[in-house]
Length: 262
Image (cartoon, rainbow, N blue to C red; front, side, top):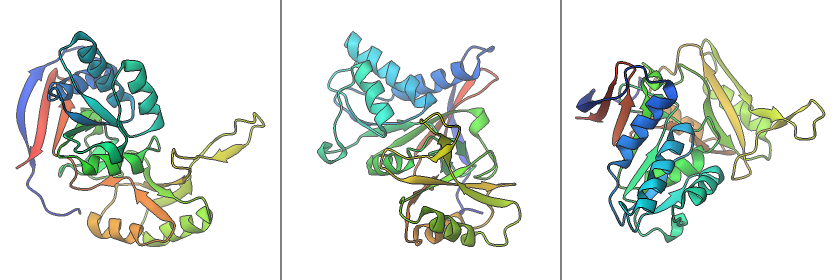
């Protein structure tokens, strides 16, 4: 299991529409997070469908004058383009004197508020920016809550293109003998239209190894993280351990809970 931690506690709850769709729930969680933003803050701007709702809300508040002097550091080229359309001023990471708050979604959240992120391929920039900030608020619907990381899909690992198939083999060796483990290089349909697949390329020009676990990752998450990061050719992985300061969860029963470690 991951490192021992006190279970998360619910800080507050608020109503959302009882018939809300998953997209509605994402929007509710995102708007709750944006309510934490104050004028003159620098924000880490997350990537993904849930974070997109936060970008739209920030743009609305800036245009109305309810927020002023806010700037964001985008975690992907897609987020950069979305933020530009929404009218959110942006900064490069090196130009941000301080990141007061980062808002982003997650693919999975475990009981210790550890995360899997980066199934969209933006894990490196997300981890750099969200790790640099004072607070990291995660926004999810309750389908993202899992008993263990790796239960619902791929755990991504970003690797350099050179020798990526060789690096894939080294990643597999970390989990040698683990029942139900598999790994592959992520592919996408070729833009050439020839019916072939190309290796997925991240915003940083790297490739992604996707790790799969039949019943989630069992064992010491910190030790597993260290083993992956010691592989030459691995850039970063999508386990965000101990990084979230709070998690906003929009639930199907019409409540929104804010979870934090005691």
